[in-house]
Length: 540
Image (cartoon, rainbow, N blue to C red; front, side):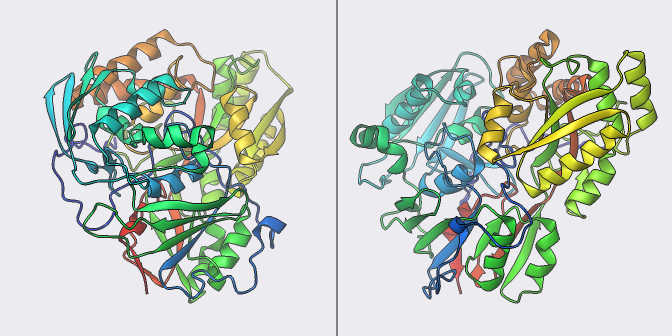
């Protein structure tokens, strides 16, 4: 049995020093409710050489344009939502985590650390008090106070957003004074600090009143950078905020996010120095970058999983034996090697193997190499033959490779499939609305395992359309369990049910691969691909 036992994972240290490098991290986000597909919108790209008209670099457009304090980042999608609790794609998250600070944040190892809250006290299982930093201002000059924390909580409660359930256990946010705020809970809520990290990026009420429906184009945070221009489908520009409150001001004056949907275009531009940084580098390009002389490859154990989802409202996928037959038909070791090319491991559990709560012994129904004969027997016993199903996926090169392998393996056991590849946001929207039969995707979550596991609750994101009262009860109970060992046991049982019911087939755990210019120094890689540590980096 492999089980990463860490008794301190539930109760983070109350006081930590920020120590120069930014401790922000991308929101714990998977899909809509907190585990971002890879990431929500995934790598909408192909391996074809060249790029579309939107990705053409203008003559003389280099990574830093001759300015040593500018960093250019290649990013896949440009239709961002820059209201943190509302976004449904990971590229939005990469932008807004540089614009906003958080009440608490996660460091590069996924531990809760101070941010706008310099300290906090757990007064009881249902009451937390946060001491806030002083002399912090929003980009519009407004002072940050505890009232902004309360306003953000109210905004989340009163407006449509996919993370409203994150603060469902919070009865009230009480302002005790300008620098002290109290969270009152209706019941013990083990993942509270991680969920605060995911949604409590303080908002300016004055900015919302000023900009109204245009706020998304004019976001106002307290973070190290402020948005100064944004051309959807092209690029956005962030500039360092002169009055940033932390002692270590950003060494980088300007960040450009350039929309480059195709993998080959991003890699070519990193190779030539037209961009300085990119995330989610396809493994087939790592050799080119390592040999470029202008950039290098950095990796970190990831916090995502390749996943194949089944819509149980669609027959015959409502039959557990059919789902289990598909699981038996898949050789996850072959899929992992072919798709990740050594940059990841076959999945043996629900949670990624980088998580402290990882346990690869949750079930006997664990077969990384698959067994087509078992699949054929299950289908025969259930009375199914000559099945025909549709696989939906994004245009991500990783997803398309996975879907093609799945198609071949299912064909070997008598299940014919048609693959439909969709633009990332379209695919994600269709999966989350239940408009699919089989979906090949890659989901990312960061922080507390509840972020992923609660997706399987009947009132969670629930892309599978499942209703399992036993599973619902366990998911609710683990949220109330403040004892780490008791909570781990509940999580193991939750994972066992998910695994054996085969609502999903987890295929692999990819490493996080990024390409970065050799000119950038002091950059700390986050497992979820966040660029927040740029606030402590510099350009040589």
